[in-house]
Length: 599
Image (cartoon, rainbow, N blue to C red; front, side, top):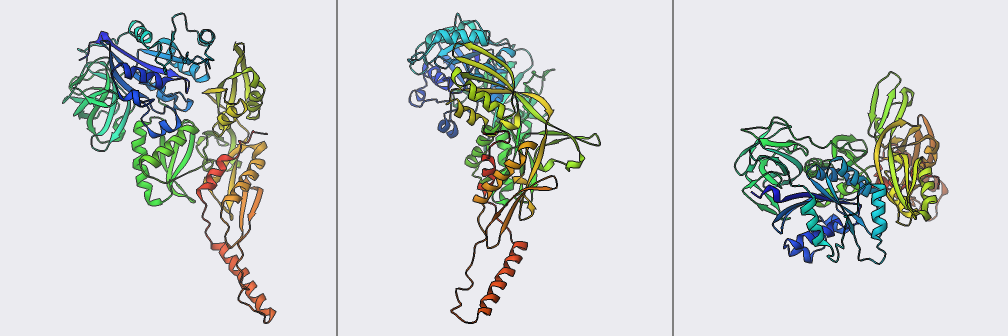
């Protein structure tokens, strides 16, 4: 067991692309990991992470440097994966707050710093990328003090890419981050902060031990479910999984105990001894509530069970993923899934397709609306299909978020216009430095889940940063827009929009659908309905088969007879014919600008 006074457990937190994973590489090199020298951002081991250049999962690693054990948890920077950061911080005594010396404090820098302060962690400010010509460490230090309120007199200046300042940072970690305070004699208490499924060993749980010792062969109990298991293997991350005989207080590692029931290993649960259980669990971090819902359906309906198994296994590794079965008349059996945001949704879909060899259709994402009916009943609508008849509705409320935008002075006007177009309400405006502005808006969540971030990057030429927190529900003047194909409603294409913009958005959706739905031998009617009224219509012209090609002259009455027969056949086809809606049609609905965007 490693001496407790020599253990330092900390997270690396920062805005996206400020150098967290590169800094972790330098620690790996100092610990003698030769692979980190050859593979950049070695902890980002998912193909998706390398392709996109972002961290999606928290990655733990235990490194022995200068007689100390550094338990490092590298964390994501994107707002959609902030739950990963909260899980990591619940397992640490300290945090390295990494800030880019050229870009300064960004919106997610603020969000992650506040989470670390809430967890009462020792925070070491680290100014990265000081090797760049545009670096201005003094300005960045001042921004950190003004916006976050952290003393930067002893901030560490580093270049993770060049390896400058790493020795000074290691010394600061030894001196300033406290050692864990645990007791080997107390009953075992270990926090599950992540888990994954292994086909041969079952569920492998990632734990941070607070009290007691986990040993190979001992019986453990998961306090939330009361399930008991025998430990077969355990170990630490180097970052590969390396077996050890025991894990003591302050240590971070993995445990395999042939846990076959995926639901037993809940992130945030406490592991204790079955023979000598702890009286109280470790206060876990709050359960994340999904904010965006969309339907996931297999292209082949026989893959439904395969999709169910894949979602259960992925949910182990992704505590924010919610799913429940549902059936769509248009798409067959599938799942209603909850996500933290659009990037989270995209990553989950890609992981399901790549890791589990599935072909999927995903429907238009929606937020949860709270509906009060005239009889006083309050329901939650996770999709347009959940909306009751308009005559029964007394009040509709939609979720609002408080958005923090940090942007250079030159782009304040376009950013404010974008927020105004998305029904945003200005709350606060301040200048943390001469050339940067910190804007605070209250925004409907439905207005930011589709393309708000892309639009923000576009109007600010990539310089703006954005973060948000859930505020609560406020009354909304919105309506459900039903899309009908040949008179039959298609739930997967229906959407909710502000009343003022519903008709315009319905027309845009129909025009896009007209381009992607293949023509048939009969006319296809596309309609949009609000309440009981059709507000927009488009027709897809039929393909024409030349039935007169075989007529070489002769009586005209024969030609008329053939044309009449074709006309009657098309009527029958229109009545009974089935229209195959391609996946592109559902994706086209995603591309339509949000209802409040008047550009």
